[in-house]
Image (cartoon, rainbow, N blue to C red; front, side, top):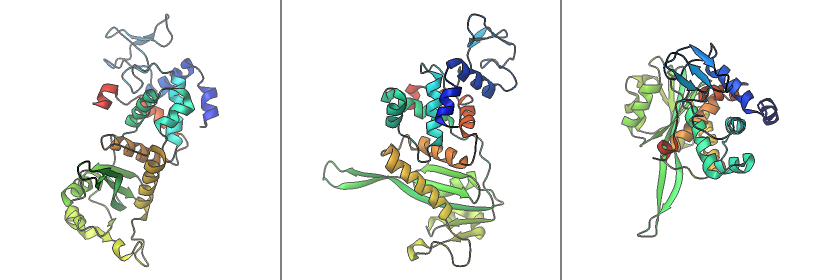
Length: 297
């Protein structure tokens, strides 16, 4: 979908709610409190539904990412399209200028959409899997000595060839930390795991070490001659992430880095999905509430 199509098709609150109801309740409206389907629409308001089972009035946005939002749904739809179609992301400042709202509203809105992009159930990766680590962030000035000290965050990347990408904000790149992400994301039936020459990988892989292949970047080896042993596909994803950080968001705190990683992987894994906008909305009406207090705590 394009922005002109969104603004034409979903120009009113009623049209937006109609779509959200179809996405949230494909088999008919259901009470978010007791999950009963004994639900009727009130004659006093088209957007209000009533559950006869637990005597509860609600709307399609209740107990979702949209919960308690006073922003028109038409603006929610516009921002969702801009966020899910921007390959390198879009900043809250750009949303503020493009759509027309305060920076605080734009920032909170973007983070709520990102929260809905978090994948809950992820299958184990198999086949040929690439794994690598990178460092994002900048430098901070030491106030006592006036010297620059590094303040970078570790991001672990795992990508299945012709499959899904996963990014994780890790404490470090030691073998124990790497082992945790390997066990949680890579199948025991994996064919090959390709990494760089980092010494922590053999120990981290454990029983999978007999399926481990490496490329030696320090020796300027990026593809093993005559083979398909390389980490180029996961490094391409890292490149996209860094262009987003440097060119779009400019600065990301360690606290919110996982949210931006979720956004990048969600969009990257669906880059060929013609219904990306609808898929994003579907996640938004099934994701739990994210309050401003919880986001800023």
